[in-house]
Length: 283
Ligand SMILES: [Zn+2]
Image 1 (tube, helix red, strand yellow):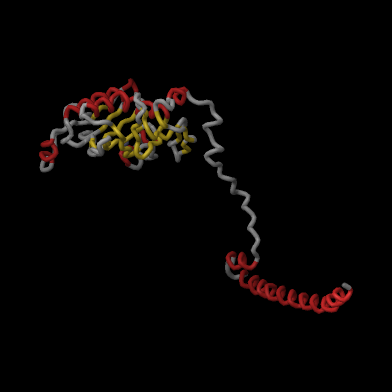
Image 2: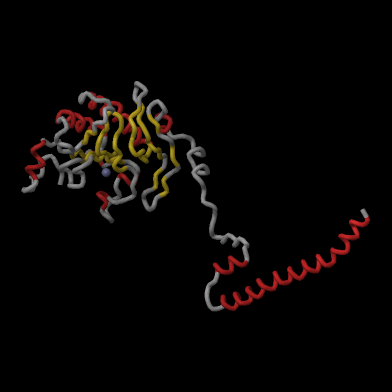
């Protein structure tokens, strides 16, 4: 045992010395590099190079505050709205979302992501893609699908599988015109629908003149009775391939129902000549 210790003892000073020399060399090189770097930094920004030499985390700038996650925000904090309590899991798959914070006027509370409407027979009608809308509007869509659309589609001898969400929440002016009055889409109070998909795979375009006219007329009548604004073909030129529905509130409860249910020949006839404005349409 003592022999062994002596052996190690003899070697130790040399070992320590070597380590010390190596350490000196190791510190001198980066030091020299730092001096050169400091000189260079006087002339040009060198944040990247400095970060490589000194691998220390940069301090967080004081103005950056942590971004709250979806879990930190409402809806858990606020008591559920009356609408939220009515829009049960029996009626829809529509989880609550945090309030929409804008920009500008596009601030909306009590928002849901309407993923599917549940029917009385427990089957679901998907909303594809899910629509971000205010709860009261989601509720209107749910009852429209259950009470109007599903029975109307049954008249086509089909079962409704999904409705096509062409646009829902979107902070913009009417008809995407910059500077126009805020669209109901900006209030999460509107939906554009292009088509319905049936269980057998058939896609029923709402503005397709070859789709059974009875079906489209029935749907138009029911839709206009439920929503305060319905715009389709023949309304303003912006709704030739889809139908817009919203729950805009107007003075005196004025409603707007502008959806021309066309016959197959109508579209061909209108190509060479401008169609006369229908008497029912408002200027
Ligand atoms: Zn629209």
